[in-house]
Length: 252
View 1 (tube, rainbow, N blue to C red):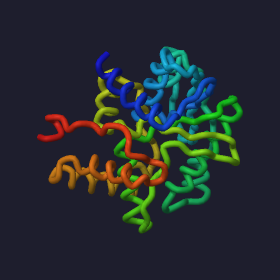
View 2 (tube, rainbow, N blue to C red; view 1 turned 90 degrees about the horizontal axis):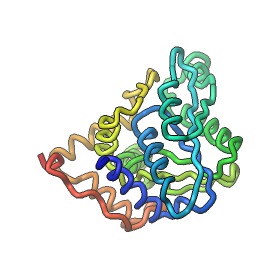
View 3 (cartoon, rainbow, N blue to C red; view 1 turned 90 degrees about the vertical axis):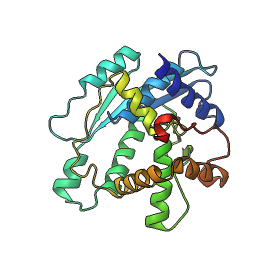
View 4 (cartoon, rainbow, N blue to C red; view 1 turned 30 degrees about the vertical axis):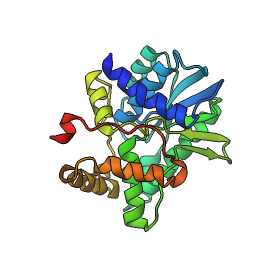
């Protein structure tokens, strides 16, 4: 299980470097049914087996209310991993697209999904929520803030929500997206494609494509930007954790 060892190595280093998990934590994994959150779920389920600080795990999916979405493959995976699974039904999609007819729906959608996830986590007795943001997400978010808001900023590796008394942790911040993709394909994770009509047509996707184009011409660009975020200690990042070494595939 060399691929599992790789994602586990990235995850444990981030958890250790940022003290993300303490003894007795009950952690809810926000599972969107995409490759990132499912990879995080598998990594934390494996880490739970031997991590020095014992912790409990559950998985939560916020059902956006799109017709025909079937989460039973996710439920099967959770049973296999021995992780309790909860689906939270909502009408978010109908509110955003049918009632409000939002032209730029992503911000409101994210806010509503976060609210539903955090409320469900508290109701299940969790004190932490784990999110599946990876290394590429860190870089893309930083560039989004720079390009469209004119500021240096990113999400934090660990965030405390005082109003909810919840910590948000992001254990995959050292993991490149290519490793997430490889793991998801190699173990055939039950990924459910996003039914959102705005999927792939966002500013984030524009930045992702721009970085991909620049990285093909200037190998390692994303890692250098990530290193700058660490050295600049942007929003709680710090200069620790070894960045991935460029592989032959990266160099090609």
